[in-house]
Structures are given as C-alpha cells and as structure tokens.
Image 1 (cartoon, helix red, strand yellow):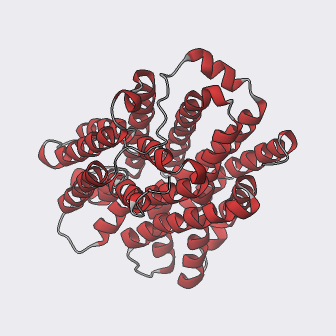
Image 2: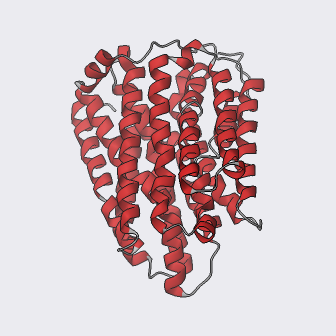
Length: 392
C-alpha cells in the first residue's frame, strides 16, 4: 500500500460526483416540464421514485449476478456511467410524455447501481484501512453530484435540454476518469453472489438489525427532504414576496451535505461513527419540527436553517454504511449491505410518494413534520446498538 498513487482517492471521488449527476436530472427540469406539459406538483413522486425503483432492482441484479466480481469494477463503473448518460440523453431525443421520461429514468436508475455501490467497491480496493474516511468522501461526492442538475438548471439557459446535456456529459467524464486513471486496487476483494441464506443469517444478527434500523430511519427522511426542497423554497418565496433563485439554492442545500459527509468522516475517527450519526439524526429531527417556524424567518435565518439541515440530513449516511459493515457477520457482509441498501431505498419511495401526494392539500412546511419519525427511529436504534456493542 506504500506505492499507492496520491491521486487515486481524488479521482474516485470526482468520478463518483460526475457519475451521479443524472440522479436528480428529472427533478431539476420538472418546473419547466410542468409549464410545457401541464404536469401537477405531485409529478415529483414518480420522477424521483422511478430512479429509486431502478436503483433497487439494479443493485439486486448486480449482486445476484456478482457483476462487480465477474468484471473489473472500473470497467463496470465506466459502462454504467455511460449507460445512464445515454438514457438521460434520450429524454431529449425520444421522450414527449411523462410516461416515457419515467421509463428512461427507471433504466438510468438501474445503471446508477453500477456507479454508487461499485465506486465504493473500487475505493475499498485501495483504502481498506481507512474506509470510514473514504466513505465520507464518496457519499459527499454523491450528494454534490446529485445536486448538480439543480445547479445546471440555475444557469441562464433557454429550455431544459442543456441541463440534460450537461448531466450526461458529466456522467461520461466520470466513467472515463475511473477507466483511465484508476486501476483495480491491490486489496480488491472478490465476493460471491447474493445468497438467500446469507440474508437470513444477517437478518438474525441483533447488532446489524440495530444499525440497519438507524439507517432506515435516516432514509425515511433523506430523499423526501431532497425532493421537497424546491417546493419549500418556492413556498417561502411566495409567503415573503421575495424572489430567490430556487434551483441554485436547491443545489446549495443538497451539495453542502457533501462537506458534512467529509467532516463527519474525520469526526468519526475521533468520536466514532455511532456518535456522529446520533448527533446528525438529532439535529435533522429538530429541523423537521422547526420547518413550519422557519417558513416565517428572514432570508438570512432561513438559509442558515437550511444549511444546517442540508448538512445534518446526509452526514450520517456514510457512518451508517461503516456501522453496517462493522456489525454484519464477516462471512455475509456483501449480502447484508445489499439487503440493507435495497430496503433503505424502498423506504425512500414510500416517503417521497406520501409527501408528494400531500403537496396538493397540505403546505409543504407542515409535510416535513411527517418525516420526523425517521430520525426518532434512527436514534432509538442507535441507542439499542450502544447497548449491544458499547465499543462502537
């Protein structure tokens, strides 16, 4: 490991950022599509969840077929990044109805399962001894990459097509970056295919159940908050009669979580992953409760509120990944993490769907209160984990 090139982690992080740029591309162009195609606010749910469904199915298929072990992870990463760029581009050249966009978002989501998890596998091949810190960088890159479509939509373009072009170009660049500059790591582990008996063994392990419970509570909140941010900002704008650049501030709120993930990774080396995750869940839960009050605050206070929430809502994510990896029985780590990710992203679908349905009848700042049980469940689960494994 002494011969490890200094640029490996920056390349993986940048590739992860670029490769995930298509994740919220549909959400970023939704305001324009609503005007042109007459879509309701509730369209945010299928646009978000199509990607989530695709990601879940893709992650399960990749694990069942052990693709990241049959192919070089860097080659698989590049193929999937370019594939999700292609399906994203087809929104411009083929789609003319919401249903067609949803199919393309679903297929793109399937291939994102070869970007985010496979990027983590590539990192573990190079940084087996510093996984917590590396995961902080990688999930941080995911947050920034996910938000990038909102940034592109904030630029003074005419129409929504340039947003799609830029997101797809970023994904291709991310794939090529890994393929060209990141060889397979010396500690790359060749795991086996997903096995049902491994899932049963993992599900019976109490420390892993406690860690997974914390992650599930976190996921109940995360993607719903990210999906609702533009609606919340638009509501604040209408309430105060003050014009703000909603796409830019949506980008900022999601992207600032990337900084939180990196700082949380360093903090976890001092105080532990469980403590970092607990603190972030506590702050995030308080933000859920403060949402109705924050709607009445001035611009400066409102942006400070969302800066804190943007950091807290995602900073615990890499810490839960680290906790699950540490608490899972060593023989079934891969299968356990696949199962936990699949359940976690399934929970996001339910949370986003319920939140979007309520947009038609309930003010968005009050919808955030429905996300509060997620942090509560997460904190209770982490308290149980502390009792089961005090050393974590």
